[in-house]
Amino acid sequence: MRTFPPIRDSTELEGRQMVAFEESNEVRGADDDGAVHELHGVTLPAACDSSPVNPGYHALDMSDKRPDPWNPLLPPSREKLIDKKIREAQEAGAFDNLPFQGERIPLVDDSAAGDWALAYRMLKGNNFAPPWIETDKEVRNLLTRRDAVLARAPRASAISRQRDERELTSIVKAVNDAIFRLNHEAPTPNQHRRPLDLEAELAALAKAHADRD
Image (cartoon, rainbow, N blue to C red; front, side):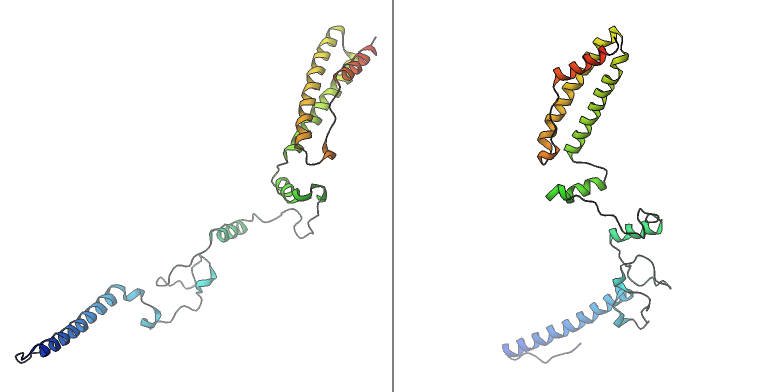
């Protein structure tokens, strides 16, 4: 501890205060450096550590596998979630025996879809279809039922004829409702359908019934 002679004026007092302040900062700084080194000496940068860094470790490799040999003092590497999922799937064999593996993927002509081509391709790849295609499938299924009624009509008895008429009337109504939706959902008139004429359908059924007589 330094000692000073008696103070003679205010200027000398200010000078001694500045010297004491500088000395206290030096002591406090040395104490702080010692505490930091004691608490965090293991995690300080490599400049404070004389041991060589493992040459097999690269922080930019983005791999969660430990380097060989593993150094517990090295920070853990990080891997993006999507890269991890792809790597795990590849190791599990999820990409083995895929369709057209090693072959050229066939091109699908979707030029008629226009601006919707990409959207339709994505829907098809996920086993989905645009609404108008699903509606058109519904129309085709109903028409198949209509054809089945007309096909069995020549073998129908007198009692079954009334049942066939009621069933055909219900089918024609459902077909026309589906066609109405289809014509509003389809992107172009090329996918439109004409509604059925109920009187013409019943006349075809009556003719099929008459073939039995």
